[in-house]
Amino acid sequence: MNRGGWILLIGSAVLAGVVAAMATRERARSPEEDLRAIGDRMRRGRIDREEALSELDHLVDRTLESGDYGIVGRVRLARGRILMDIDALDRAREDFQLVLGLGVLPPKEAREVEDDLIDLDLRAGKFAQGLERVKALIDRDPNDATAWARKGEMHRGMAERALGQAREIIAN
Image 1 (cartoon, helix red, strand yellow):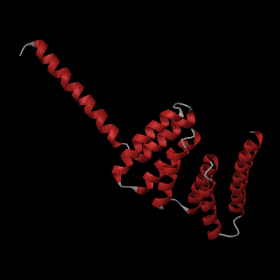
Image 2 (spheres, rainbow, N blue to C red):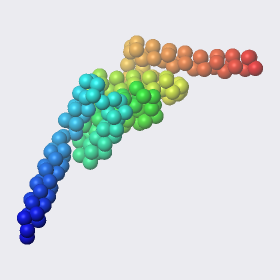
Image 3 (cartoon, rainbow, N blue to C red):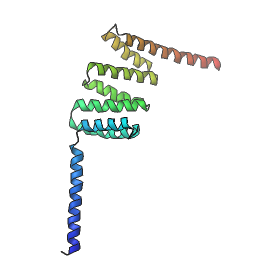
Image 4 (cartoon, helix red, strand yellow):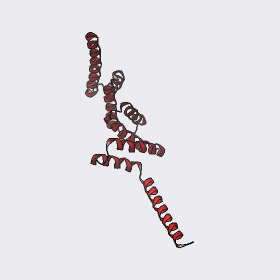
């Protein structure tokens, strides 16, 4: 083999080694580290919500393969909160419901997710669904003042919708 052939062979071997090292390093990061890194970059303003959402979508796929329901729940919760911020209410609802269904959250955090679901119901105008969620909270703790207040918000939303329809009928 001539001198140019050897140089190309050595160069391609070095390039293959670099690519293999990068691929190995990428796989070596755990989903927890990736989730933490995404959160840190968002807080520092290095990525916007859409980029974070894209990365979280990929991370959801990776975590499903891992079988670790704790990290699956945390990733879905982070993605659900971003989806809620950008008004992708149905997708956010799916993530929040899945997180609650996994049963991996401590009680206080699970309650926050239930409150997020109630907020989604209010924003989407799904008052009957929201009332069912609030009723479940009140059934668990009849002294929960926050749940009673949320029930009032749901009824107010239903009344405002009915008043809007009535005003429209009167105007026409």
